[in-house]
Image (cartoon, rainbow over all chains, first blue to last red; front, side, top):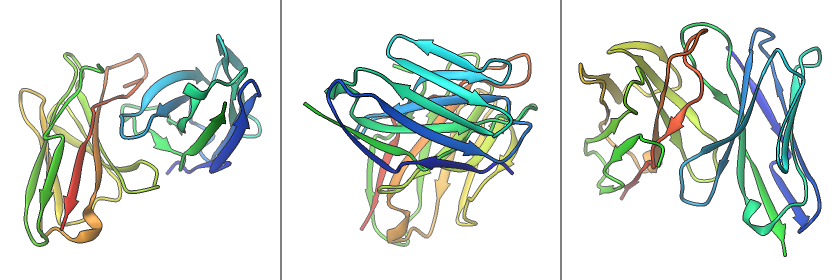
Length: 113
Length: 115
């Protein structure tokens, strides 16, 4: 099955800095890569996703890049704000009728004012 | 609001007991997934149902079982509870896509505390 590794487990930045979270996956057939943000005590919510037919996607201060050859994808947050503080999970999905998102272990992002 | 409803939000029970967690997926979503999130842990996939049938199993203990009913709501049954079963249990549902289900929408979760 799919295996997703996520680094770092904790990331501390100053407000206004950029933050980068990296994930690798094992199944070269995976074709959908969502990123979720989970605030303390709340549910994970999708913030951005990318499919295997594109290499980069941006949404305001958030961007995701995908390198299919190396089987890794990254989340980039620019101009971080204290409200960006949360746990971020990456996931990978192989094709087929069963969508079983395999999640990374999460990155706790702390943005200091 | 994701449209996925989980009940109850909190549950406190004693070791050895049995509990049932309930999930109502978003309207039109046929896939339901259950995840367990322990303290400082990631999201561990337990089981998936699609239109009433079990589709995939993850690291689900034999003491745990689930089902999806004709109205597509799902229940996760946890029995012979142990202290280590204390966790946040999430249900997620997913709409169909051209290559199968796509984005997963999560419910608010049920926080289970076993004492």
